[in-house]
Image 1 (tube, rainbow, N blue to C red):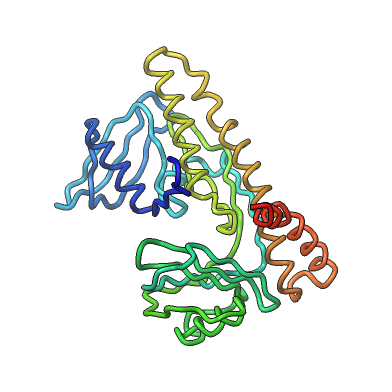
Image 2 (image 1 turned 90 degrees about the vertical axis):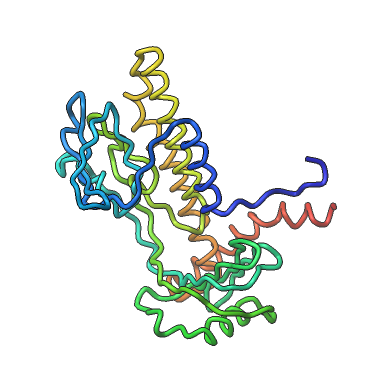
Length: 291
């Protein structure tokens, strides 16, 4: 690996590679499934019902169910409401997130500005994701392409080139969400089905992979050794890790955003955040000087 700084793997590429491995090892992958529902998750053999592409209702009998269908998926709804709790933190601002058909050079640029946070981050050889902090009440209609590029340059304090077509836009409220427990009966929640973490932390995929890794080891131990101890502790193990990451995400998000735009938390918090940001960046600066 000498001479290699790192390898960037877009999320879609990672998922495609994981799917290839799953199919290579005999996995059964079914597309175009609709009206998915889970039943009897607290029995020995829970059931998954779905309607296939031909409109025929199918039933899969399971030993275990991994609910990895995202925040808006159906698996979490199978846990009784009187069992599941939800803890949420709202930061009070949003990001305008836009996909642009232009490369990011360098691969990631982040800016703290009095008008708000801004970033341009690579999403492949010829695409990049743009982020602009904005009020929760903003809509994509208030952000035509020209305004996005103009605001990005203002917050970067330098021209942005090249500019190109913006293919998608959305306003994303910044929040943290944790559901507990992450298991019930034979159902085990994985990734965004169990938690959302502020994108400022760039921990969403890592959290999901951590959950999947813990569950994979637990299932292996149960199947090969008939030892359920790791499955029994799955929720506690993953929730402990999730709360550690949430704590880090809240700190870095507030540090970066409060140190720029004082309109949300005031001048006192802005100055405190700036000192935290300086302390965070000082080792990076010193490393660059030493190098």
